[in-house]
Length: 346
Image (cartoon, rainbow, N blue to C red; front, top):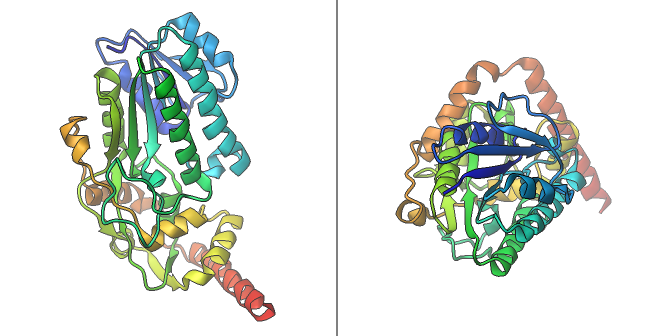
């Protein structure tokens, strides 16, 4: 049973909330939170250590506290929150490598829980109706958070081969949404005018932040080795999500998607990356049978319910102000003009 738990990424919403949740577990004596910046959320009796997981100092922290369980939640999904793409990749990949090196050297660590993502399955027109945990991407992600997630999982599997005595649980989450969360997809849904790939209406899955935290708690306090997809029941299409959000869809030819994405990112409207464009073109759905049968977890929120709870919390703050609509229209008009100019030159 988990007695001394080290949690990475506690300055972020999910990491900080999870650290507080662990404090209520009767078997957990100490919770140690690691991050490079002090948390804004009150961590209660969690012992905060200001440290960078990219630094070998993490091994000393584990040794001094006799950590037996490590919960890795510091894999960052958006460059904005990391200070840029280069920093994001360093934190995700190099940070994970250093953390695993510290775990490998520690004689007390007996359990590792990793918060991963369904982005490891990639997104393409050749995808199956549902991905199961034993499937791999039909087209490997070429960049961004998805590529980082694939590399992180590769290093974690390598660690598992070197330390077979450590119980490893990998949780692959669908798009996590919640009233307090801000992600690339929630920024996209908050745009008053939303560019969508012309001719496509992909299926999407969501998992509520509360359900995500409960799944991580189960993996931490009990023995559930393996890899698990985690998502709410059902799917919603992109058009359904936009209607429920009260957003205005603007269908855009996929060939112009890269130009639109660059303009939207430069304007700071949303992180409209190439991998985001792929998701909004082809979608992604995963099978959650193992989540129920082996992990023993049944989410409280369906995919539609998780989306609705997120939208309900945002409705008061996402009124379609004319100024906001005009800003996005200018950004998109500029993107279309630039794309048309490049096309004529070519």
